Amino acid sequence: MNASVPGCDLPSAPARQSSALDEFQRAHALLQSALHAARVVAWTSELRTGRLIYSENASAMFGASLPQTEEKKWAAVHPEDEPRRRAAIHEATAQRGDYVVQYRHIRGDTGAAQWVEERGQILFDEAGEPTGSTGVILDISDRHREPEEALARLRAHSEQQRRLYETILSNTPDLVYVFDLNHRFTYANEALLTMWGKTEQEAIGKNCLELGYEPWHAAMHDREIEQVIATKRPIRGDVPFSGTHGRRMYDYIFVPVLGVDGEVEAIAGTTRDVTERHVAEEMLRHSEERLRFMAESMPQKIFTAKPDGCVDYFNRQWTEFTGRAFEEIRDWKWMHLVHPDDAPENLLAWRHSIETGEPFQFTHRFRRADGAYRWHLSRAHAMRTGDGKVSMWIGSSTEIQEQKDIEDELRRANQDLEQFAYAATHDLQEPLRGVKIFSDLLTRRHAPRLDGEALEFLTYLHAGATRMEMLIRDLLSYTQAGRLEPPVKPVDAGECLNAALANLTVAIAESGARISSDPLPLVNIHATHLRQVFQNLIGNAMKYRRPGIVPVIHIDAHSENGYWRFTVSDNGIGIEPEYTERIFGLFKRLHSDEKYSGTGIGLALCQRIIDRSHGRIWVESQLGKGSQFHFTLPR
Ligand code: ADP
Picture 1 (cartoon, rainbow, N blue to C red):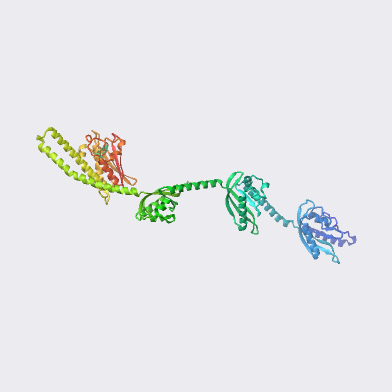
Picture 2 (picture 1 turned 135 degrees about the vertical axis):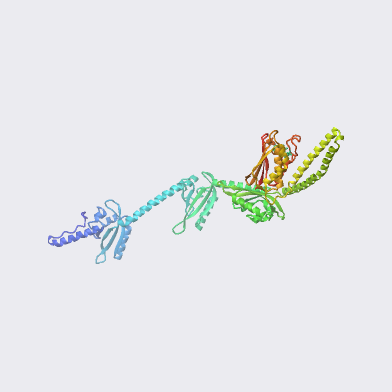
């Protein structure tokens, strides 16, 4: 208010008019205060003199030194805004009206730009010629401050974003770039420049061909860029390229960059070095090819299945054997070729393996192309990933028809042989009995008339006949071992033991053996067979006792892995470990007949019986330390 604005001083008035003048000066002061409070500067200009007159608050609002002429005033307007202001004034002059224009005013004191709004009116004389103008200038920097701040924030944000992207793009190993619509690079990140071995200045603005790409390669990218522009869709590919890192394999993608109008304005691309992956894939493909070749050239039938059991590969041997195309037998369709009698159990076994991951093994018949069923032994194993999950099944089926035929033949031959042995031994008993009876009669009735030598021969004859009788009896038991049908209901092993002991009464009395047993279970075996096993094992335990030592024999049974394990232990002479398997062979003995009489059939008979009952028999022993004969029977 104190600043005086040259040219705006009020004209001096005569003293007699003092009261009117006072009144005027008060009104003037009031008006100045109002203008100041409203941050409005009033002004008037005169065209003829070119002078400008401002209200008193002007110097405070615009900075100390104010332009005094219209021309100077323009100089205080921001050069970018001056044309706009002038245009508004011209328009108002032409239209004989008012104008409003906003512009930046350059402050006289600080030189800072300040947003103002000028509202003006052009003044005319009677002839219609412009004489000057008058109006107000409002300080509107408040209105502009907010958008300016927002703009500043936006700038700071986008600057931060730019730094962020630049850091990412210059540190990624991937190659990142942008093409313009003329296929020229407008951006290439550090990795790409390094791969090219070029600086930004050398590379930007060039196309592929100019950057030394082989013509076919550059032409391919040209086509792809055009396709991205035309379809507005990304395109992907892989290509080998020889850069500063040598010849490498690259996987790339070009994507369209759409402008606000929805049109493609550039093409952005990223390229990744996939050499290692490519090499690994190649190796995998090669090894798969090798495996497939191996599978195709093997005589076995090979298949692979997914973890859910669906067969996804059969080799040529399969398709040739079945006479079916792969599509006809894939997944679970091969089941139709399994013999109807084997199929249900086959299905159960395969399902069990899939559920548990346990190896699959099954013997079943498959229908050949000519309709004949052939026996096969199939096996499959699960292949697992690092974390133990089943990734696939690999299986083979081997035709065992010939083996089966031989087995059948052997079984038939064995049956015939058994039949023959049974008949022969049975028929031998009769004449043998005659030899024994007549040699007895001869000894008893004619002994006085026979000389010493004849009597000695008769003794040999009798001993030989007795031994032969024993042999025939044991052989008969042996041949009969397979003839008895399995029992309908389980038998009491305790009762079988008692029956055996009853048959051994004489031997027990003679040897003075002490025999004990634990309670024994019910088992699925013919009572005669179990009695025979006990009788042989206990009989041997007494026979092979240590001289001068009372035989102590114990029998017990324990449940073990779905079986009963029986044990007959003794304190006899024991067996050298190297003979523990041999003694189960037919006619295999470790001692002479003079020392321990016997036929070498007892243990062979035991093994035959236990084998047929799906069990196992073995001995644990040491010479001089007694023996434990074990045998198992299914529960
Ligand atoms: P055998 O008793 O008629 O000779 P086995 O088949 O019963 O025929 O036995 C075969 C051989 O095993 C016997 O000759 C004997 O050497 C040996 N053996 C069997 N049981 C025992 C036992 N409890 N202790 C020591 N040796 C035995």
